[in-house]
Length: 153
Image 1: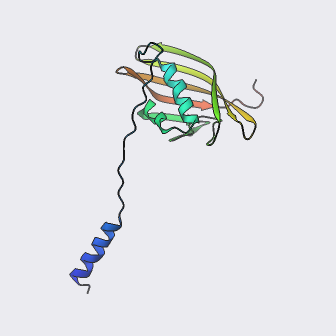
Image 2: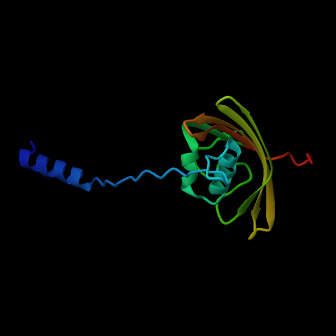
Image 3: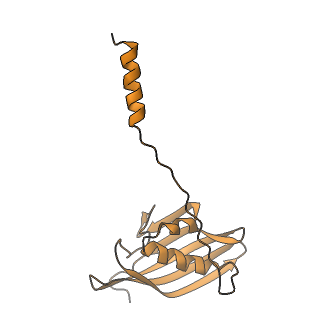
């Protein structure tokens, strides 16, 4: 039968072995227009793609907590979130964008190219975003991206 002292020592050792860390919330990224006014949904989407492609975790602040992001038929929970974009040194260029706003919702369609200089390749992609105005800001509530099929222009 174990002694109460030895049980207490084991419990203390186990508790002491647990490591805690302080989690600091990320500051929200402010998206503004040239005039300093809050930016539109398209500006939020462009920033989200750029931050995501560079691996910047501040991209997370542009999404609603319940947002769903789908890349080539797979749910993505973290960067890289968009089709054709991979981790590492690369650059994304938005080649076309359109924004449609209806009330507190916006639908943004974006074509982009991700360039990987070390591998000398360019990956095209297209993404559709649904954004919702929450207070003064737009939040991404849904994004779906895919790459064109090889036989598509």
